[in-house]
Image (cartoon, rainbow, N blue to C red; front, side, top):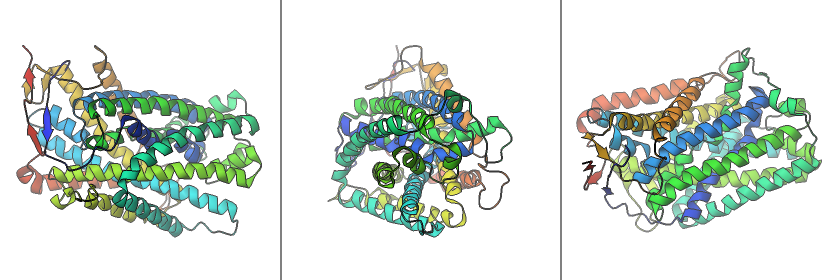
Length: 502
């Protein structure tokens, strides 16, 4: 697949190219908010795996995510498009399987991004409720209140995306700057004021308060906190049709955001583990970052201000997530899998308004899971659901890429060469990077179905696998009922599709 020339032209999308490279990079940095995810959700790792699961797991996650991003960035440089993986799958998959694989890829990817929005919103709502509980001891953090907070967050960011989308690139640029400044503030405060721990505690201390007797399983379950912080690097691709010089800006953004966020996430991991104070008092809290800041500063106001910074950044993440998931909804409707009404772009706002509110409505229904589960269990279900979908989409896209590399057949064209855009893997590195990305993604996927707490009951069961299986089954049934015979495939006009190597 070294050299293949492909040119594909979309039918007019009627959206505006608002994003510069700097704005898209800030969008991606805050969209992932890797170090904030570690800070706000490290309690899940202390519950499973202990400090060593963060200290070592974060390194493994960054390396694995970089291999995924490198594989995807190469495809984004060839074809930056809102549909992302399912378009790349259609480009590279063998001719006989192309339509079916593209169909399944599109559905699991769309569902993954809807549930990713649920995970971000749930995390924001939980930390907000934690701040209120800390400031007002008489406040009772009822589960139904968490659901109502999620509703308020979703509706507000939906209105921003609908009526003031021109503001979103600048909002994300500002939050990208805050993303870095806030990290510096946390590091300085914790290093200068926080109590210290020895390296043995940070790098060797395990633990499974969850009931898991296997330290290996507990370690891998604890690793999902940093892994969640590195899901979504491909969210920038959904904005491709609204980015200037997309073939150069999009792939570079995907790589740079992993590198920058990797440095920030591992830095804050070490800082928090070394300065977190008494681990028993931290483990007893549903939101460990709040007592960690309290232990360091000795001031409720100072701790609240620090955590409020995380809340602001995460709110911008939700705004970005709504923008991203609305674009893949719009693209999937444009390609005929969702109702065509969702592909409509508002003539004045230049936003796919209908595609914007459908994911929000679905997440509002998913938020009802909070009422019947603990907040931690609901959050784990949201993150596992989105991880199942996104990892599946990565496996399919990288798998067809590897097939094209090893067989020399791109789609139905033998001996074809690809014309790359602004980024590509170095000569000879494509195959090993793709293989490692596949192996890493498959390895993490195995543990997504595991319950985070033993023994299992109705309030802590991991519902991710059965829900994901239901989504896949529905997509299969709909394929045989309608898609196989009536779905026209992707809404593309091929122009000079392939140049055969002489």
